[in-house]
Amino acid sequence: RGSASPRRGRGMTDLRFDPGGRLRGELIAPADKSISHRAALLGAISAEPVEVENYLHAADTDATLAAVRRLGAVVETGDRGGGNGRLVIRGVGLRGARECDGPIDVANAGTLMRLLPGWLAGQDGRSWTLDGDASIRRRPVDRIAAPLREMGARLDARDGRFAPFRITGSPLHGITYAMPVASAQVKSCILLAGIAADGETTVTEPAASRDHTERMLRAGGVGVRRDEAGLHVSGGEPFSLHRIRVPGDLSSAAFAIAAAVLVPGSEVIVRNVGVNWTRTGFIRILVRMGATVGGELEPAGAPGGDTEPIEDLEIRHGRLRAAVVEAAEVPLTIDELPLVGLLGCFAEGQTIVRGAGELRLKESDRIATVVEGLRGLGGEIEATVDGFVVTGTGGLRGGRLEAHGDHRLAMMGAVAGLASREGVEVIGMEAAAVSYPGFVGELAGLTG
Image 1 (cartoon, rainbow, N blue to C red):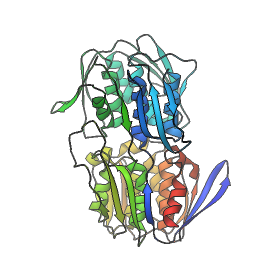
Image 2: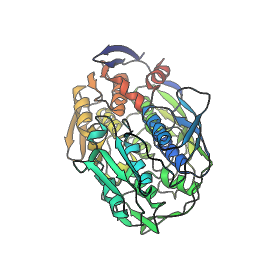
Image 3: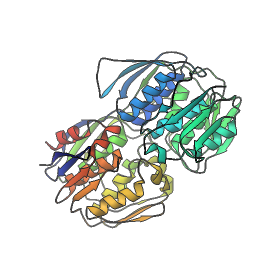
Image 4: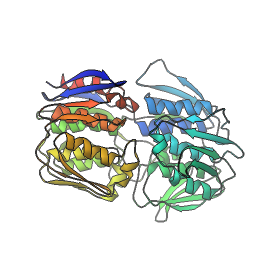
């Protein structure tokens, strides 16, 4: 039977995950982190109170609630403490953000750091400074700075591209902007600025990325449309949301899904998870690798509506074959690519991930840390400039894996431990609380 044993040291929680029996049971995934961030921000922008069901309470998303409170929004929480809960957000409207003393702390939340300036850019004559932890200070903001400056805002960053940075709002005008790299965060920043701009803003992407922001804007009455020329948003329209239901987070559930695929005899049902086609790239890769996944997914390339599709998924252990992940798939699988590397260690053949340079700009350099971590556990994996190559050997020996403060690396190490021959000690397991505070307990429940 798999188990997790805690050991504290150096101010961190180190946990050992031992191999063992199959995973069985049901999992209700934590609320979607990406959608929770957006629900808080768009709730603050809304002209009417917004009820949010199933909001994720985790370190990242609570930083977003703290930020919108500082900007003047009133956030009323439900009775539930911790975990997923109900909120009512009474916002300040599109142009009502108030200035505040001292920097806004985005903590470790890269989504907040990149989306919030889009809203603040349209607050004429007001300025804010955004800062965060050591990881955030290493993540560049130049890709949001360029379009915001083109629209008329000012963004002054440390060394031209890092936090802390200052955003000064101005009257904005619509632009046509070709994104050099597909990124849902950068796209969303431009769209939020676009709804406050004069005229129409058009964004073109080199590949599709998550469309949660577009769906919420449509739900709030904003004219958002997509055609051959790109994604268009109209400025100056009233924005008023009423209710947002946050689905379960497939990116968080992916770790239990991967464990069920890897550990013989496993069968897990994930309840009420979001199956928006821009989030199910990992499931499509899993199926390509030979995994058995039951459940109805939104069709790939489906035109986005104004709601998020929700489904139950059933996952069973299966023998894996290698797969190649191309650049066009990366934006739809960006958070799950470390798991693709792990799965590749168990698959027959050579698994290759290309066009994933964006991984180097996450909470850690995820190409370097995934390669280092899996190699330390006995995997045959090599880094490339924009991805990695894994030669499947049928499994992993085990050992120690350093999380580097990265929640997804910590959870990948836990899954590796359950599937390995000797177990894995994850150094800094507390990083998982950034997105999934209950991860260790819920994983133990499936193995127990």
